[in-house]
Length: 72
Image 1: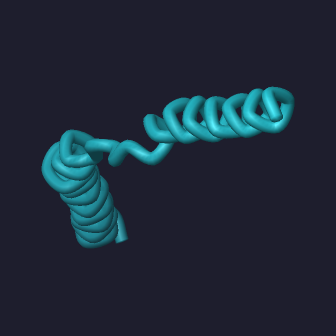
Image 2: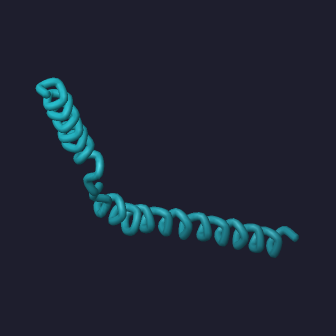
């Protein structure tokens, strides 16, 4: 009788310890800071780079056009 109680107690304690050890793994991860960074800072930087590239392309085309008008 004591052996079966001992096994039952051991099984119950292992089950409880397993549940306690696994519980922190299911905690929610806070991603609001990353979402805010992607939503604002990276978007602003990419917009600035895009405007700069388009401006340089327009400047290059304008220079080519003026050069063609003067020396063409």
